[in-house]
Amino acid sequence: MKLPQAMSLAQIAQMIGGKVAGDGDLKVDTVSTSPLHATEDDLAFVFDAKLVKKLAECKAKAVVAPLGAELDFPDRNMVLVDRPNLAIQRILTALKPKRYYPAKGIHATAVVDESAEIGADVAIGPYVVIGPKSKIGARTIIMSHTVIGGEVVIGEDCLLHPACLIADYVKIGPALSCSKVLLLVLMVLAMLLSVHPTSKRTWLAPKILVMLLIHSSKSLRLVMWCLKTMLRLAPMPLSIEPQWVPL
Image: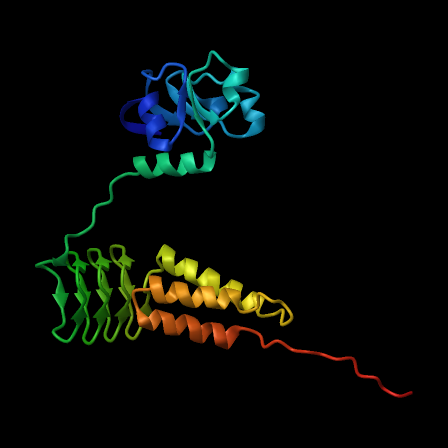
């Protein structure tokens, strides 16, 4: 993987939350995810315990490794991290290529029916067609040459890639944010706890869920939907007593 520009180990350590062992001014411009196939110009990721033991076979000029690896290889230039998976996520996020989306608003070449409802901060690209009575949620991005039929409902924060075809009456979204996913997970946990009627914590999770919904949700509709779903899907606690059948 080619880096946008050469970076020193000190810069990489700051980016991924690690610390340098060795020469912090050493610069690299390529990254290898396979330490055994890395070249002398690469920065290699070495997180597997078996591969850490084989660091002597790695040709990379520097490696990103777990804390403690410097004890066995004191002469290697390293960026040491406590949480390897988080380090990978941070460096990939920082180095991800830029995505090009249409600007907010309706492009001059787009055809949008007069009866369509367009939310705030929606971006509609070139040659997009939106049919009658369709509704587009806020902050949704619709890329070029997409055709949307009549009475279509597209939720908030959605992304339609180029040349999508959305038929009449289709409903899409809204896109789930991290907070909404967390609320759904808590809802499932609340339902699982309700299976045990004798537990003193039976209503602890639902109470926490309600509090989180009220304080963190932006929409009262989401609150009501989560509560209705929880009540509809949660199993009713049953108390089953043995029945003696005379012989």
